[in-house]
Image (cartoon, rainbow, N blue to C red; front, side, top):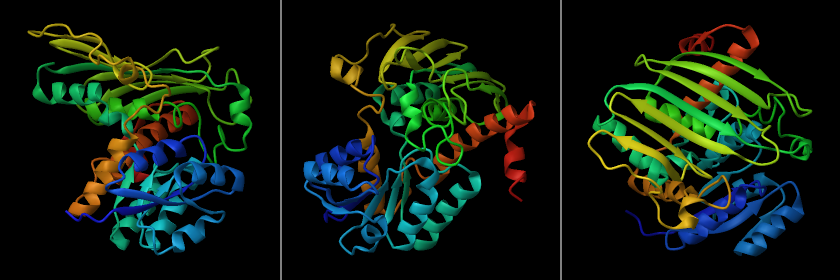
Length: 350
């Protein structure tokens, strides 16, 4: 593995960018933040000053820089694919926030562009790295739960109307609704643990906000394994976030991971094992201050390792595509009023 520090640039200096900057700073022996770019100069200057980086007001100038190896895309979701493609064509490795894109065609174009350019593509699915989620994944793979029967992903969060008045949140072109934005991490975690989904039926509605997309969505799933699932995601639970969780029920055990950012073992009963509650002892570790959690660092560290070793990162473009595909199937079901087979989405691309 090369010991040379990778040089990073961040495009988009909004809500999530500080988590990227902090993570890069914490990996200072392997990484250095060189420059940031944002269409709003004051936002770029604020982030740059805090982390000792340079400012570019045009992201294309950041992509043109020879002193940047990796570009982190932290812009509105509708811009992820195009900016990621441009970064790849400029020879930069790409780390893109969720979702990877808003259409499967765009996701595939980004995956293809990175492959053609010989650069690494990492999608930020940080909750997979949380210790309780890692334990849950290992538990399922060990077979100790037996056959999986039912899996639920629940996101009962609140966003004020002002959240949707920034020009992009809640729009079809740039964001999507409560399922695509707020719930996709939990949807990703559910399918990561339960396996591929075969069919989905969903309802969505805009109940409490003025916005283009849904602020509440519910879906029932049939997994390829025969197990069933339920997804509930919303931004209507006034006055605050109430729950974000993934629950798995098997023949020989029932487990639920929740907390602020899927960082707490809420319920953990497995046949032949002592019940585990409040698995992490540090309150800061159990309940991070934001729903972003602490695992962006792990995602970026894995990207650095993958680049050095010439391997695919653990959350590569194909992994990021899976949760996007599932949400898009839910959206198609909402639009058509019928059950959707996920293979239909693939055939529609042909």
